[in-house]
Image (cartoon, rainbow, N blue to C red; front, side, top):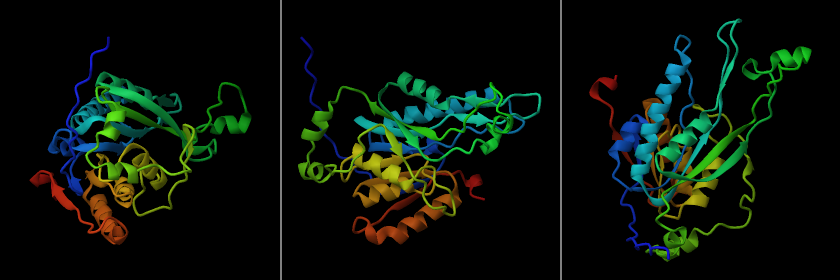
Length: 295
């Protein structure tokens, strides 16, 4: 007979809207344990320098991502979800005597998530563009002479990987034991939801700083994996697409961004859009950079 699971107290986070200027890992370490209800993010891609040894740089990248993923597990409430976009990376050849290199970043990140105790939930395929066959030189030789072995199609998809923190807390319990059932009811998903794991995503119009993922993607993830008034965290916030999606759907947000100019852009944008968000719309700003980093 299976052991009966102990019922846990359902606690609502006290975090309020905030933007944190810091490296992702530093910002995560600043947050209290189990203080967020959903993590939606898109890390900066692995891009080695021209003179860097690729394997050494990639190992360091994965070690950093492991630390970030571990901290995400610490700040995420038990039983709740983490969604991360990732794609394989093409490293163009550096000389004519070398071959280009494609690195399966998504699969390596998946291994880390499993090793850090997350539960795999879903892999959603994001189709976001048509490949030209010539982007970054990929497939350019084949498009000219059509020789076998040279066929390398331009990738037009990336992954949205969805994980859950632990299995001790049943999803039914998170729904039925919520202390504010009216929020659960108001969070119900209407018709028109995605019915397959292949999503056609349209890029947003170009902004001053490029977004790491389309607004429509963030809106779906926030809607499908959180309740109203939940706290949504993005440790690689960029221009704050996740914050917009959270605020517009009556969730709270916590954004971590390491670039001061991008963080300023995000905050100006949130203030400008504030009239359409939760009333009254406010957020705090925390600067965790070291003094010698402020120049």
